[in-house]
Length: 171
Image (cartoon, rainbow, N blue to C red; front, top):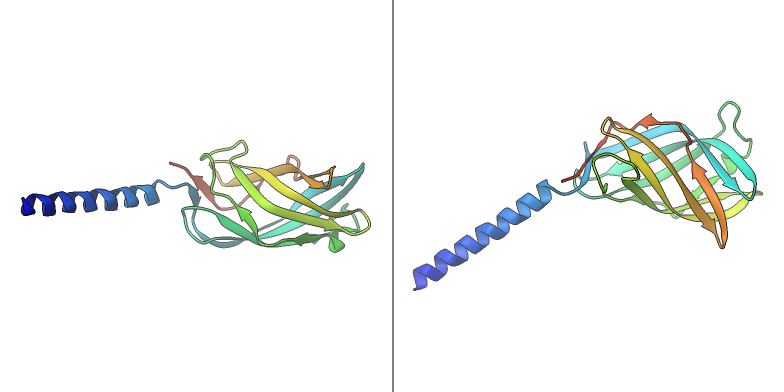
């Protein structure tokens, strides 16, 4: 009887270990892992009829090929034709969380939470989440509505798509 219990315990442990391996291999994430820069990419911030166009550079860290990552810095710069307000625009509440993808290919398969942007003389902090589309080639675009109290603030890179060098992995 004791040998049966030991054998049953051994089988249970192997089953549990196998489930852990399978769940970590099949977990959603991004590949390859690591730190990288995206941009500068064009984007538009809108608030009560005022639009500020800028170029954004995102500094991203994906620590593992399973799970989420962070955007730990965002720099707003004035490109050709952009608003002179861009250098004063700031990203707050960093790092922003890049959730694990909800599918291997968009639409809206990537959510960035904790987003907070301030444009002096245009709007105080607009906060919320932004949805993004990451396709199977690693190209990304985003857009969403942030809020300043009851007032909506738009953020989008419009039709611009840029390569991240990363693809979503989804079980």
